[in-house]
Length: 272
Ligand code: DGL
Image 1: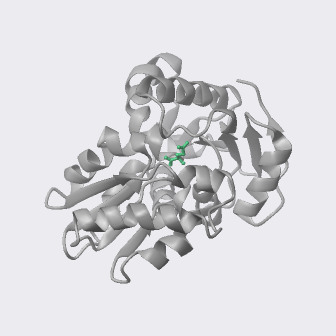
Image 2 (image 1 turned 135 degrees about the vertical axis):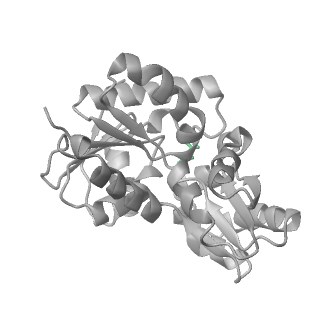
């Protein structure tokens, strides 16, 4: 039986990806799952991120999704490969789980003139070196410098991302990064929460540095994937709906998600 496209994030960040995917492909049905009760994932161990992500993927499968997008860099960096190689063959070899790192890595080389690229992301994503490895496959000449920004997700999750207090931490990590490699001319926002910080990121980044927010690239890559995989495309329902699930309080999620998306959201609580 066909089902919606599953979109997973540890919390609200994946909504920035869902927004782009829906604006490019509004006709499909979507099922979003935010594991807000256990967010943030960024400072957790490989084992925990893998365990939580796998649970969420299973949940989305059990609710009819044949295709799940890990709209979370931390989960994509730390759990995707194991889920694809180890779990999918046992769970259901016909289902697919895709991440956000590869579509971002694929396009970054088109943007940089200096061949020096920076990445800001969670500790987990930076320590995994997944971006460096994926970028090297497509663009081996690029020099990639990563900076972990452990305070940025809490700022977004607590709605402090546009407050004056956020300036200190936005500037701190960007200054660190640019000091480590002043030749950087392209910055990857390697965490789906970070587009919310964009006004402040632009304020503290040299004007010459391009900022790559991944939502649009992930959306185009998914559309391309579905064109190349008609056997998957025909297993997605087309009602143009989006349903939202959270492991935390649904009222809080509804309120915050409405702010992220700019329209009213009625989320449902789910226990995993
Ligand atoms: N939004 C997630 C990402 O893209 C991370 C948030 C978290 O730390 O849970 O990495």
